Length: 278
Image (cartoon, rainbow, N blue to C red; front, side):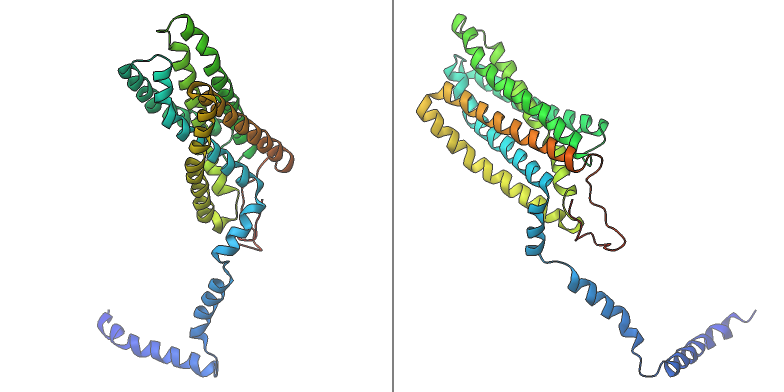
């Protein structure tokens, strides 16, 4: 009934209550307790260098980054040389351009989508054993495709216009190489302490870009020594073998160390998750 007088006396009532609390807590600076707690929490967060030192302790992180770097570097090498290889195998200029454009606009995209779908059906990238298992199957596919590059030469020798085996092998090579891309990216950010995910992602792309810079010149040296076609085939085979080895070790470690679940979850004793190493 008396809303206006109640609102008029409300500030006075609050001032009285605050005055009583200040009288009861003489010498206590309670308004500063919240600020002090926040300062303590900020001070306890590890620095970037401390987060970097935690990353090598995560074995799934290491193998996921190595696999992604290997596939990215080999793909970059193939992208640079595949048009020249097509011309050396007897493709005319227009046929080589159409083939390369078709392969590179369809195979990697479908590979990443298929890899994500399969991994999700097997429990998601948090289940590292399944994720590295998918990578292993893809690695075997790239190895068989790179070996098929060598076998496809016999068809071209018999008939210079029969390039279908090479085109199929190239499409499967880039498809399988892209299968673990998105799922291993999930492993990279989930296999490290909770607060280090952004640092892990940065390290991942640093290694991937470094591989794109280093592997093509290394493959180019092999091409110079062995010839364009043979050097291209041998470089893709070597990269595929490295891909297979890294995937096998990743599967073995995931099954032996973390058979069910390897995702890092903050515990009540350490809610920030910085001390949790898989």
